Length: 457
Ligand code: 5GP
Ligand code: SF4
Ligand code: MG
Image (cartoon, rainbow, N blue to C red):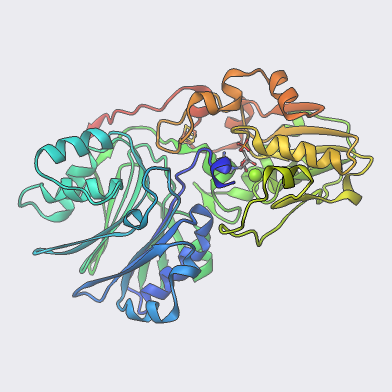
């Protein structure tokens, strides 16, 4: 199941807090609100100003931490991470944050994203004598920074960051400072907030709401922030002249209560649904979404067309990762996981089923079958984002072009594959119109934002 769901991913979550008496508790709560970004591992590193302490493990935040562990992570600053693996080694060693002990003090790193020149840098570092313990890009940054001579650590980190290409959001902790860095194109989301007399940084603003922090601003592309006793200092390690937040953050990854670049994710999805209505004003009896990520778009479509929005599909919340999958034969007998159709809602109806994205087409095919089995007369699938035709070069991609259903098939071929009565995708133009900010749309258009950094500073 997990493998089938894996599409464009690498939406890990990072969080950091500076100057709060209960830094590890705050981080623990924040990680809960980022749990949707990764369920395979979680970790916290905290500091009391003298040493760094770590707790991390595989599984959900609630599985990795107990109150006792949190109490042991004493101190007023902490960073945390939830992990969504992109394949490769999926073991304990890759759970973040990574903690490095050295004679110059301890240092911890957590990151979200993917460094596209990681292989080259790793090879070069190994030739020069480095030995790696993990697959993580965070370890590459640590090695690069360590080799940066005798300059102060922030300078060495900035020089090291300028050598990385790709999409990344880093939070880093020392006994006396919290460092934050975002890739030069701003592909990853990262926001800064204030909490009491201290500061917080998070992949998504939904964490701020949970812990009662106030949003200050989004971290800028290519920005390096130092947070220490003297306050917040902003530097630039690179300028790309572009702002290319991953569109998939709005479409699928982020939580509806988060705001990205000042635009609420639920609101953005509703707008995508409304734009779908303008492009595909269908005649139907009910509109339904696929819990949870497409509900906002389905509501938008219903509002714009006047067709009633209904709960046509229900998701079982309690199917855990350890759930034993029904065998193929049981599945054929109708043992279904996770999603069930609400027969009373769809029976005898022309149903518009709005989904947020189509990657392999697995979900669409299953749901069309579910709805038809439950008696739907017609099933019209509308996707609230454009066709994904190109692989993502920023590490969100575990799929090759061959696996992307829309890369090689026409919309009509896809419709037949899904078994739907009609199929429509939101156009790239309409998608662009919904968003106020610079976006990466490369997996839809094949136009990758400039990968080269124009200027190192
Ligand atoms: P498909 O089933 O077509 O391969 O993937 C699209 C469906 O899976 C959508 O319903 C979407 O909500 C869900 N999904 C799960 N993981 C991902 C992901 O990493 N990226 C995207 N775009 N959709 C995903
Ligand atoms: Fe996001 Fe761009 Fe990658 Fe698509 S190509 S998943 S929009 S970063
Ligand atoms: Mg979905």
